[in-house]
Amino acid sequence: MSDSAPHAADRRELTAAQRTAVAELLRVSPVADELGRRFASAGHELHLVGGSVRDALLGRLGDDLDFCTDAQPDETLRIVRGWAEAIWETGREFGTIGVQRDGLRLEITTFRAEVYDQVSRNPVVQYGTSLAEDLKRRDFTVNAMAVSLPEHRFTDPHGGLADLAAKVVRTPAAPEESFRDDPLRMLRAARFAAQLRFAVHPDVRAAMVRMAADLDRITAERIRDEFTKLLCGADPVAGLRLLVDTGLAERFLPELTGLKLEIDEHAQHKDVYDHTLTVVRNAVSYEEDGCDFILRMAALMHDVGKPATKAVGSDGRVSFHHHEVVGARMTKARMKALRFPRETTTKVTALVALHLRFYGYGRGEWTDSAVRRYVTDAGDLLARLHKLTRSDCTTRNRRKAAGLAADYDALEERIARLAAEEDLARVRPDLDGNAIMELLGVPPGPVVGQAWKHLKEVRLERGPLGRDEAEAELLRWSREQGIVE
Image (cartoon, rainbow, N blue to C red; front, side):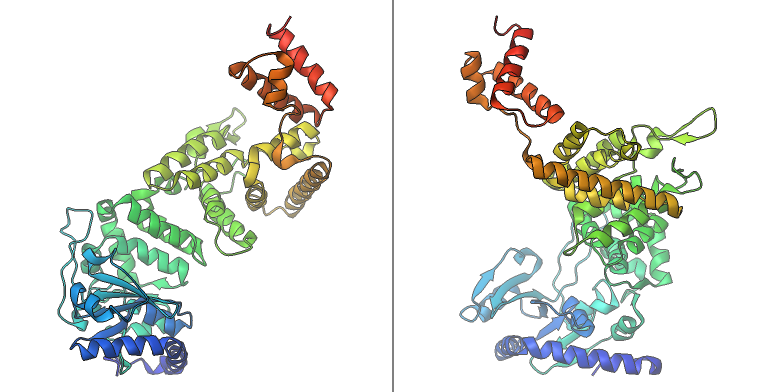
C-alpha cells in the first residue's frame, strides 16, 4: 500500500503506470525476490528503491537495480556470498556492495542518513535505521518510492507517484533542507528537467536561486558528471536554461551566462545566448546513435569567445573577429577546470576552433588545396564538424538558410570527389622518412622532420605527386635550405 493516495484526476494515468511497473518488475523479480528471501532469512529488510522504481513506473527499467537494506555492508557480504556471480566493494565506504547475478547488476546500500557538514566537499555517511528515514533523505519524491521484497509492498510516503504522473521535480523534505544536505541536487534537478522533460516545482526553483552559491562546495568531478548527464538529456536546452535562470551556471560555467545580451554579427537582433541554445538543439537533431557529448559540448561552447572579442565599427556594425580562437582557448580552460578527460577536451576545443572555417566557401574562393587543408585539419572530427557547421545556421531568412545549406552540400560533394581521387583522410608526403634520408644522404634528425613537413605542405597544396616530381621538389627545397649543394 502506498502511504499517500494519488489525486483522483491522476488515477487513470497512475493505474497505467502501475501496470507498466508490474510488467517491468516481473522481468527482474526472479533475481530480486530470491535476493529478498535471502535477506529475510537473515533477519533483514530489502527494498528495490530510487531510480529503479521510478524507471519501472516509466517503463524503462534497465539491468542496473538499486536496493536498500537495514543490513550493514559486512552482513550484506555474508548474505550474497555463494549466491552472487561477482561481488565488488568499491562503494563500501558509502555503505554500498555491488553484485552480479543472471545478467543484472545489483547495488545494495545500507539505509542512509548522509549529510554535508556545510564546509567539506564530500558527504559524511551516516547509516540510518529505517526505510522511512532513508526515503526522506533522497533527492526527489520520484526517487523516494520503494518496493519491498519479496512481498512487493509499495511504499510512497512523499507522493512520488503523483509527481511522476504530473512530471514534476519536487523534494521529499523542504528544498532548502535537501539542498543543504547535498548541493549537487540543485544541478540534478536541472538534469531531470533535461533528461525526463519534467518541470521543476516553483518552491524547488526558488531554493535553487537562493542557494546557488552552495554549489561551490561540490567537487569539480561530481559537477562534471552531473552536467554531462544533463547535456546528454532528451531536452538539454530546458536544463541549460534552468541553470542560467537560477544562477547555477554562473558557479561552474559562467561562459554560458556571459553569452546573454551579446549580439550576433550576422543578424544584429539575434541574442547569442538564444542562438547558442538553438545550435545545441540543432546538433541533437543531427545525432545518429544516441548522445554525442563532444558534438553537443562544441555546440554549447562554439561562441563563448564573442564577449571578449566584441567590437563596434564606425558604421555601428558589431563584429567578433577571431572569436573562434579565443573561444577554443576558453573552452580548453573551462573543461580542464571541470576535470574532463584530455582527449574529450582536445576534440571539443578543436571543433570550436574550426567552426567558422566554412564561411566564405560560397564565394568561390576555395581551391582544392583549401579543401584538403579543411579535411586534414578536421581529421577524425570531420563528420562532427559537418554537423556543427550545419547546426550553426540559425537564420530565419529562408533564402539565406537555403544558400548556406547549398554551399555546404557543395563542399561535401567536393570533399567526396577529392576523396575518390586521393586519400584525403590520411594526407602524407609522397616520400617517407627513409626515402628522404637516402636521397639527401642525411641521418635521422631534425632535417628529416623539416623535409617531411615541407613535402606534406606541397602535397596539401598540389595534391599527389609522382615519385620523380616529389624527389625533384625535395632536392629543390634542400638546395634552397643549404642542406645539399
